[in-house]
Each structure stands twice: as structure tokens, then as C-alpha cells.
Image 1 (spheres, rainbow, N blue to C red):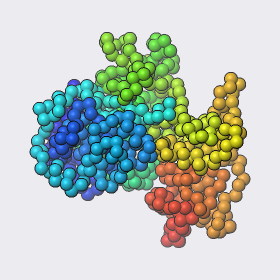
Image 2 (image 1 turned 180 degrees about the horizontal axis):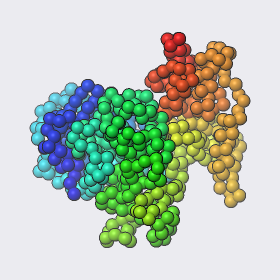
Image 3 (image 1 turned 45 degrees about the horizontal axis):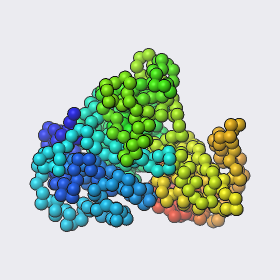
Image 4 (image 1 turned 90 degrees about the vertical axis):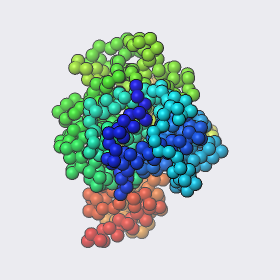
Length: 592
């Protein structure tokens, strides 16, 4: 079983001066990328990095990020991605829990973690000189602090935790060769192809993106996050860089126009349930696949395709080195066609949850169908096996949901809300469709306490990333319950939907009372998209519960209903809806 450095260096030997990474106007060859990573890896070794040590990485998307990830792996370490957009308290928890030996960041990323972990600022002039002075040939085990084995850690990815804290999934190199084989057998990237790095490095899907390119001889296309926003920005990036391979979640596929992109190429849907409508939209003119696998495996477990709109949407069959079992509550096989829980096995299983032996033991259980010592991962997903061997996903066993492709445990969001001293009980539900899916929270407060929805959103945002902060929070005297005393989540969803449908509150327009004005039309769109009773000039789109996908939807409605193209960046940069209305009005005037 080869490690990532071995696989990458074998590709370098074949590709030489072929393009490995494209970022803007910069083109980095395989030879250059390997040399830069080797030099930095030697500096990391001097900082104590070695097998089974974690290195926190906090850089924006750029060619340097790819260099850092490869350097960490070449030194024998495992990378721990830190998204600088995450709340400081959440990042601090991850660092305290994972105990990395080093934080590698760029000058433009400012994180207050120096008290927890030593830092290496890769673009600091002194560090650049130190790196440049190192030899650039490949490292061997003699160079490292200890031999690098497939059983050593490759990365640690933190996911939402049902008990209130994120948990780190520890993944080794053991399943990487199977990933490469699965990529070759499905999306088949080759020299000359261009693979988009779409997923955030904080998610395991990012490893699929960059390994699909750099372990096959293709070119990895890296772009700033704002150029990857679903909709027009993503479409423009796919066209501008002539991308041939992209892995995108259904939520991104649903709002992005497929015309003139990935023509004759390959697209894979993953991260959430794919639909027939998406297949009908994206499969014509290109090969389309559907991938499945939780973070607790090395990126995935199964793949289906090429698929067409005429097919039943399945998650396919296990790829090399992996297997899927459909079992009942006693770990007995369930007959084909009948739903059970999906248990995953094979080389790709994670080592477990970092520093969580009890949780690891409850989710990674002995495999009665495999060799002694082998394990099964209880996915919590339900589905069945068809007679032809294809697996079909049906539902979840628990309260885990997907929001814009992100894995969210409702229990973690509820635990954060209950941590506020005024909150007695909290419940969170998902409302909206695929692209507009968002969290809505309901709380009751302790006797005599008072708290506003804005205060609770701010409290949640102190530790939860943006996609986990409820877009709306409702304070009720008490939460509805079912006949057996459990919180009635269906009733809560109905409360939100009916309020959005029936609320007659007028849209406040501080500048113009004319309902046909640009301002009034914009505020009405915001109100409808965010399902809020009021949207006024002084409000901020994101404070009302907006997020990137809903910003894309707003830009789309402005284009469709007013005939103007407003950059999504304007939605992000406008402090108030009044400022955004001015941008829209100016666009309208330039068109007329």
C-alpha cells in the first residue's frame, strides 16, 4: 500500500514539466511543485513534524496551499485544515483537541492561536529564505523522524458532533491506492485534463479533487473562493479554465447553468442526495457519476455511473478495497430490496475519532464478515441493495442533515442554543428546498428570562460555522410535542412555512413607498428568499439569515425579474439592503 508521497513522486517522474497546478495566471509544473514541497517538508521536519503528528494548515485557496499539503505529507505528518472563516472558539477547540505540533499559515490569515501552537508563516520573508536554502530532492525515510507507513495519519477532518462539539476523524494513507483506482475506473482523469479544486480544504472532498489531478498526471485548477460560488461565478470559472472534471454537490449543480461547461467532460455529484432533475440537467453532453461515502471513510465508498435521467438514482457499487453491508439492528444481513442500515468496510475506513475512544468503539464495530480484527463503520444511513448489486440510499437513522452539502448534526446546534443561560429547550429543523435549505430554530426560555432572536444568533455564531447558524430563531412559550411527549418537529416546520406564506406584514421601504420601485422589489425578494416577515433598508442580508447559496438565488431573481446582472460580490459587500438597492438601481439605469 503506497503512501501519498510515493504516489505523487511516481507521477512527477512521468510528468516532469507538465502543468500540475493552475492558479490565476500562474502555472506550476510537476517538477516545480515537487521541489517546492520537498524544501518546505525539510523545514517542517526541523519543527518536529513526523509520522502521526498533526500540522494545522490555514491558507486561502492558492498554489501555495497545495505545496503546504504535500509538504506536510512528505514530512510524514497529517494535515489538520483550519478554515479562517470559522469562529475563533471553534478553531481553538480543534487545535486543543488535535494538539498539532505546528500551525502553517499565510500572512493574510490572522488567527489568535499562538498560545496554543507554534506558527510557521510560509510567506514571511525569513521563512522563504529558510525554505529556499533547503535541498529540493525527494525525502526518504532516512530523512524523516521515523519511517512513513500506510498506517500513519494522512489528515484529520472535523465534522459536526451530535453531543455539542465537533469531532475529528483520523484518516490514514491505507485507503489511498483504492481511491486512485476508483478515480481511474470512474471519472478517469488523464494527462491533459483539468480538474477543479472546488471543495474547501476543510472537507475530505478536497482530497478527492487534488488527488484526482496530482496522482493521475492531470492539472489541478485552483481558484479563489469567490470565483467558485455556485451560479454565474462557478460557471465562469469552469469556462475560463476549460475544466474537464468537477466534483460538485447537488446544491451547486442545482443553481449553476450547465451550458458550455464541462462539454464532453465529467461531473460527479456527491455530498447529498442526487435527483433525477439534476441528472436530466447535467448528464447530457458529459459523463455524470454519483458518489457516496461519509468522512469516516477515505473520501468515499461507492460510485454509480455514468448515469442518465432514465436510471434509478443509486449510489452505485463499492469501489476496490471496500464493501457495503445492509444489516438490521442485530447485524444480520437484510435481503435485497429491503431497507436496513448501511455498514461500510474495507481499507478506506478511518482509524476512528481522534481522542474519542468510546465514540470510536460505538461506531467502528467488529466485522463478523471479514478477517479477524477487521471493522465495520455504522454509517447511520439507511438503504438497500438491488438484485444487480447497486445500492440505493433512502434516509438517515438520526438527526444528521445536510445543509448546502455540509454535514450538520442538529444536536450540536441545539446544544449550543441551550448553552445560553436564558434558554430552557431548543429544537432545530431544516426548511427550504435544495439550494435554499437552511436551519430554523425554536426555543423556550426559563421563567422570567428574556432574550431576542438576534442575541441567540450571535451566541450561536460564537462557536458554530456559518452554515450551522440558524437563519431564523423563534422564541415560543413552549414547544409543541407529539402524543408520546417528544418535540413535534413537523409542527415546527409548519409554523415556519405558514408564517412565511401567510404573513401580511408590509415590506418597509424607507426610501420609496412605491411598490414598483427597485427598493420595494428588492426587499420583497429578500423577504421571500429568506422566509422572514420583514426586510427593511437598514437590514443586512446575512444578519437576516442569508448565506452564499441564498445570495446566488437573490442575484438570479434580480437577473430574471429586473433584467439586471448584479455581481454576487455586491450582495456580500453591501452593509445594508439600502446599499444593495443602490447597486441594483444603478444597474437598472445602465441597462435602460
